[in-house]
Image (tube, rainbow, N blue to C red; front, side):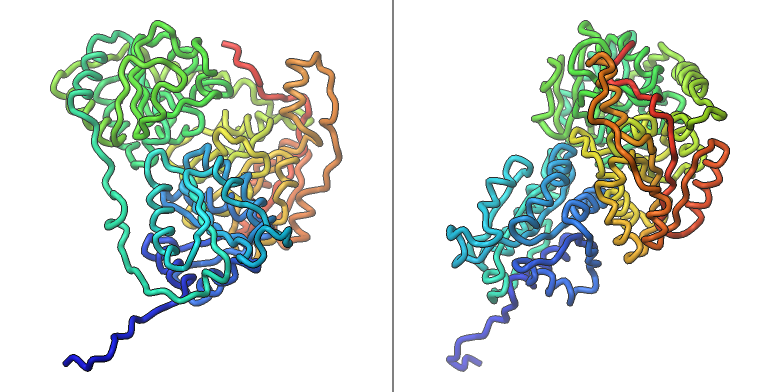
Length: 558
């Protein structure tokens, strides 16, 4: 019955509505540090048991945890910080997410309107600061725009190419009341990627059919769409060898009969000796990076025809001119080639991939000196792969020691290897590994880092202890900057400068935090130390004193 009275619309705070939007997107972890202007979001999270808030010791650590979580889970993740220095502390990791195409969404505070443009404490124009390292950055002007902004942040972050988005609001906006807008994700963003054009698939297969020495080069798109199994079936059907781009070496199992291993500098000789001979290169789900390709002809033959597939159109033709560019979902590209290969019955067994890979692995094995003292980096890297189970996840830092770890880490399953991609941030691996472990608590997680990287985010060991996140950190400790030694040796006549320092015993430091910690001086001690660290069930640090002179190559020498 019409009473003639206006109906009352149930309202909630804008902060509560924002968090409800995160819930609809399936967010179950938020990383960050509270501050004055994001406390309204924190307060809403307090009343949201479905979301675990992980308090970190530095905003950079929080953002790297979010990056690791998103990278290994394939889902978007959220980090929160307050205004000013809270936000600026995020940017190294947000930049890494941008260069790695990882959907991390930062939800930050900003000074209240009465404080703006008055040289107030922690006031700055934040959006221009975030624009170069995000796909979209927006300062929410009023409470009515909060829920729409959350929807757009996820829509933009998950559109190809994926990447971070940033939204911010002050407490005065977040504490205002608004009417809830319970809009489900399917109503504001496409949940099914577009398929590749059949005509372009016909062209791709026509080029392949004329090839004598084709090779597949696979990248992150295969991981993003869980297409590793389909890619393996295509390789088996066609007999074509498969190499991976370095940042996605887990996109194709290195143990597969058709696998050549990762490509490029610090990659595998089996890939680097085979790919230059290819007359047709089929890059699948690929964004070419400098480590894998050098951005010049050599690893890729200038005479080879290049079929470049990517779900993101802007990735095609950046470095090398293409014979054919194809855009659409990675799964549909693989399925389209497989269907056409099956109908033709043609195979291309032009190289014995398993033999090439076995020769490469023998060369890598020969470089391992298990009795050498000081301990050699290659031996540490080899032992990590030996001890970590096949389903274990390696998170590799930047720097000299981690380059060895990447070279020796043979992958068996997708999403078992992670690097900081084109950003190369030293110190990222510990917080990234914590995010990885939270996303995959069923898997052992190990991070490999140098001594500089170990110091960068050492405070997150307290986070690991408090949150009970059992990650094992292996420190390649050469008392200095090994990567820069290698560059100074290669390009500056061996004139070493500003690359040496002294470290604490990182194993002892770990024990101060309450973690498991050991220091290793002799090679015979290493395997047992790693096994004890993995078995401890606690955050753990194994500090390995290594030879300063075992430097990974910084130039590619065929």
